[in-house]
Length: 321
Image (tube, rainbow, N blue to C red; front, side, top):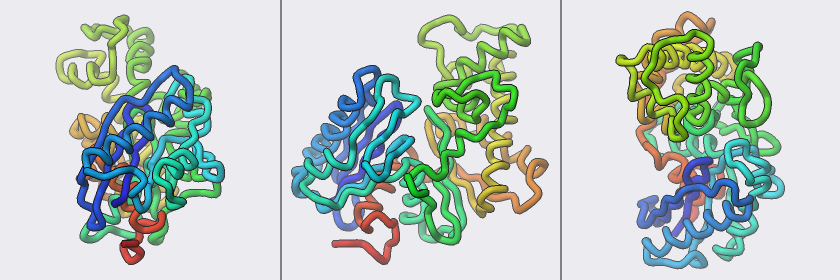
């Protein structure tokens, strides 16, 4: 059996699959915040143990484990290094502890969006050699495949597209500490601050609970069509997202951009339709197909399993049984 882990800023998921890729057990839990990096590591290990139990097996019987993780990564050390969207988790060991748990050296660490683009290619009947998987969730990131090769970078951090600067004025600061990044405006964790900024600047009427502790991006999207401020926020998000998509197109020339992450999966009409409308006016080259991922919330975990089955490559010709 093989395990796949999806370590995100909001949730940690683990799945266990057989040699045919069928998922036999799974676990999902909240990613610890404010408890330190080791607490996040322990959550990953416990998720693997629980998924193994659901599959009626033990972790030390796993053949290999793939991990798709939030960044930034230190690929050589096998750790997440100071993730911006998980307060208090300065350094999260992953590869070493998972090797010890599973008693195998076959542990493969990827950026989560890279794991997702592996999944998009591995499980599809046909997938282009030039495609991008984009996540719009707690953060914004991309997995990039060019000429049939998934780009990882020397340190595992290729595709951190959410940290391109879209707003040179830098009205909002990204969780990484740098102002003006795409993620600072369009990531689910930052949309509430953007709503407050627009309200203060444009004085639009609203019934959104801007000052309540539980105010979140879901409330903004839920109010679409009924609240002037919500509509303004969603329109501005469409502008920022369209600029980000155009940056991806000009950088990587994909034929297809598949999109996942909670913000997009829960609001595809409000997030993707405006981008489809605006993008032809923003690019000088081919306009790619923009599609919602068909693998849902499991896309990263399933890509991690595919990585485990293929020695980290996602190449179906290299499935190890």
